[in-house]
Image: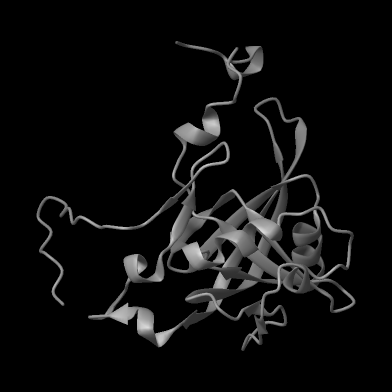
Length: 204
């Protein structure tokens, strides 16, 4: 099949999110101007630069995470794993502004070192970020879309020691999960290595 997005796909479910998959889940914690915590998962999330380390997440609508990140200049990315999957899903609930998703999902909160938003206490890894930019995205005609992209620079990295194995972060041991479109998720259960041409194998 072939279709133009502007004309519709004719399927019962939109295939785009399943084609661009799997994707890391942007489980973003922020605080508002009054210091109240917020925690929400974002399907549109990824690393966009390794040096400096820059992360991005995009919100469909000007939601609390975007507002808080713009007002305070900070957020934390929390890795989602299989044991945290149900709690992550719970934090996607449409709570009112100022309601605490940590409490709603029965999650412990741990203090960050360089930013004010707390991190998820039980996650194997969390990245503290300072906001670089907040941008409302426009389409190819310049029309604003009410889709808001936040880019943050990582200023601190938390990794639980038990998940560093032979000098590498062990995604299989951490049970990292990813978003796969529709209502589907995937878990990292096995890894295979592939060397680029001319690249030496990793030494551990």
